[in-house]
Amino acid sequence: MSHRDPAKRIPKFLGTEATLFGTYTLSDAAVGLFPGVVVILLLQVVLPESLTIGGYAIQTLTLPLAGIAILVGAVFVYLTPSYTTSIDWIATYLGSLKTPDEYDIEAAKEHTQLERIHPEHDAIERTDGAFVGLVQVDPANMALATSEEWAEQADAFSDFLNTTVEFPIQLYSTTQEFPVEEYLAHYEDRLDDPDVKANPRLAALIEAYTEWYENEVESRQMTIRDHYVVVPVTPMEVQFDSESLLQQLATLPVLGLVVMSWFAPRVADERQAMFDELDSRLRRVESGIREIEGCGARRLDAHEALGVVGNFWTQEEYATETLEQLARRRPVISGAGR
Image (cartoon, rainbow, N blue to C red; front, side, top):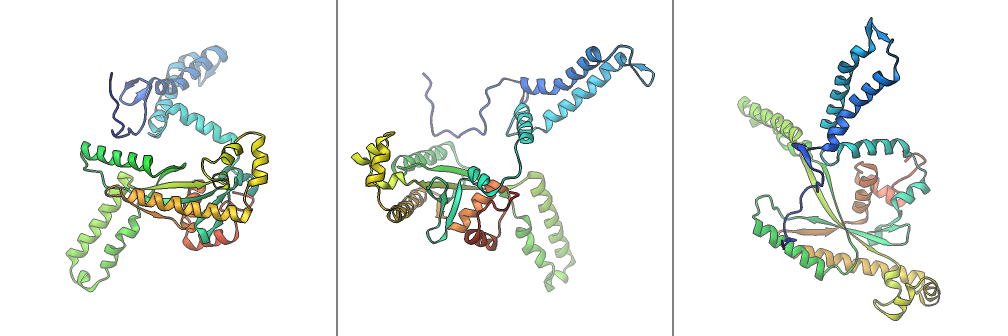
C-alpha cells in the first residue's frame, strides 16, 4: 500500500482529466472545435442549398468558414486563464450575465455578511452576530528550501493546528500588484542629486536600470502574496461553559431555544465575553505562528481588517483615511449602486 506523506508540497491544481497534448484536455479540444461544428450544421442543414454569397454557393464556403470558426475557438482556448478550464470560463461568463451587478445596502449585506466595525476592539461584526478578527502571516522564505525543510515546516504547521487551534479558522491568501513605482522612486530621486547630474554615465545607468526593472516586472507579472488567518467567535460559543450540560442542551432543536432564552447571559455581558474570547484566540494564533521557524504574525487593527474585506468584495484598494471614514460612518458596501 502506498503511503501518502502529508508534508509533501501541495500542487497548484488537481487535474483529473487526461491531457491530449501539453496542458490541453479533451474538453479544451471540444471547446475549440465547437464553433466549427456550429458553422457546418448551420450551412449544411439550416440554410438552403441555393443560397449564394458573392456569386459563390454557400456549400463551397463551408470548409473555409468552419476553419475560421475553429481558429476562433482555438484562440479562445489559448487565452483561457491558467487557473480555470475553458468550459468553466464560459460557464462563469454566462453566469455573470445573469447575476445583477448592483445591490442596495441590505442586499449587499446578505452577500458580505458585514454588519458593523468595532474599532475599539479591532473586530468586525457579521450579520449572524459573530465577531471576526484577522491575523496577517509573514511566511518563511522557502524558495531554496530542500524537501526535508519543507517537511519540517509542514510538520510545524500541523503541530500548530493540532495543539493551538481549538476553534474554527479560515485561511485566506490573496495577491496585490508589486509596487514598482514605490520601489523605483529612490532611483528616480537620485537623478536630481548633484553628483548624478555631474556624471552622465551614472545617470544613464540609473535610467537604464529603472526602465529594465519596469519591463521585467511587467513581463513576469510580479505580485506580492498576502496570507491571513480569519478567526471568528460566535455567540453560541460564549453563552455557556465549553462541554457543559447547558451547552449540549442548547444544541437541541426545540429545547435549545428554551435553554438559551432562560439561561443565556445578558447581551452586554455576552458581547464582552465574545470580545475577550476573540482577543484570546488571536493571541494564541499569533503566538503559535511565530513559533514556526521563519514565520511572523501580527493582528490587524479594525481599519486594516476592513481594507482586506473591502478589497475582497470590491477589488479596490482603500486609503487609510477612507477606511477610517467607512468604519465610523457607513458600511463597506454603501449607496444604491454597489
